[in-house]
Amino acid sequence: MPLVRVDLSKDASQEVVRAVSDTVYEAMVNVANVPKNDKFQVISRHSSDELLYPTEGYLGVSYSPGIVFIQVTWNSGRTVDVKKAFYKAIVDGIHAKAGVRKEDIVINLVDVAREDWSFGTGEMQYAPKE
Image (cartoon, rainbow, N blue to C red):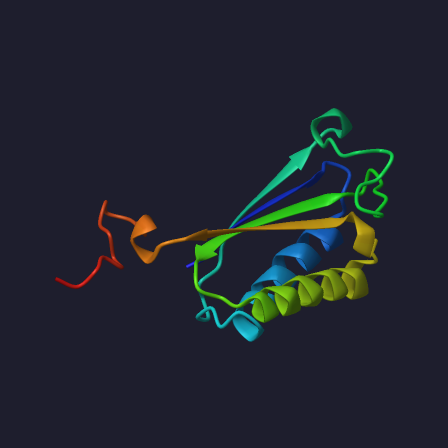
C-alpha cells in the first residue's frame, strides 16, 4: 500500500529516474514485504532552486545538486531492522544502477494506519472489520 514520492533534478537522466523507480519498488517487495503490483509512484523533476539542502552538509553527510528525495508513505508496523535494510537496499541499488552518490539519496518514511487509504471509488478498502 505504499505511495512513493520522488523529487529530483530536472537534469536527471531517464536512466536515473528508472533506477530510482525500479529500485524503490524492488526494495518494497523484497525487503519490506509489500505485495507485487503495489506500485504507486509520483516522480517530480525540479529546477535547482527548488531542491534545497544544507550546502555545508548535515550529520556528517555532504550533498550535491544531484540530490534525490524519496518519501514513502506506507502502513505502520515494520521493525527498525526492516527499515534499515530498506534504506540500504535503495541506496545500494540506485548507486549500482545509475551511479548516483549514496550521500545524495535522502529517504523519509511516513507510517500510517491501514484505514488511511482509499484506492479509488471513495471506498476504504482496508476498513476495520466490524
